View (cartoon, rainbow, N blue to C red):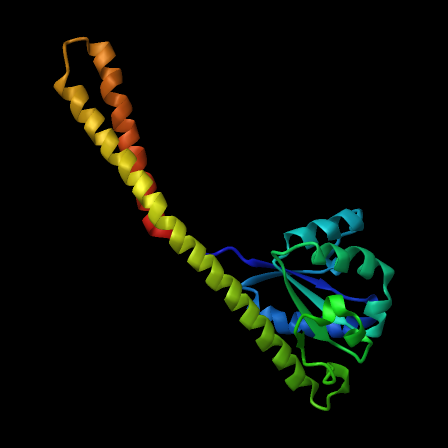
Length: 213
């Protein structure tokens, strides 16, 4: 089973109700993603390093955009700044409420869900808006999974070839050890056993690669 994609939700605490709706939509995707936000920080934990650690590990960061979000100094100086420093993270802007989002070029250059001017709070049918958000996130998840699969497909043949080389080297070394047997039981036992170990280890690794790739 493929590892879950780490998804971080950045939001203003004034927008808790929108966060609830977002998490409800993402619950259907829990087999593919591991969703995290600061409400999952347990008592006794230091929240700042935990947030930064989760941000650094995230493959997808969802910004739940509102005026309160844009006015948060912590979100601006820590969360947004930290994410924009990375090139390996997908940024998804979810426009919860009307805001000055278009005037923030570092965020507005990323395609938003729903499109600007169609914020969720401004729509008569919010259920449809949330389905649009969910569909957009699913497409990003599918893109990441496709890239992962392509990377695995490129890597696996190399692994197989290396294992096969070791396997044949082990077989050849084992054969040579048997042929060159002179009667030194203890020494030749070592000469024979080591290539056999190499051979069986290579065979086991080859089986694993074929089973889980």
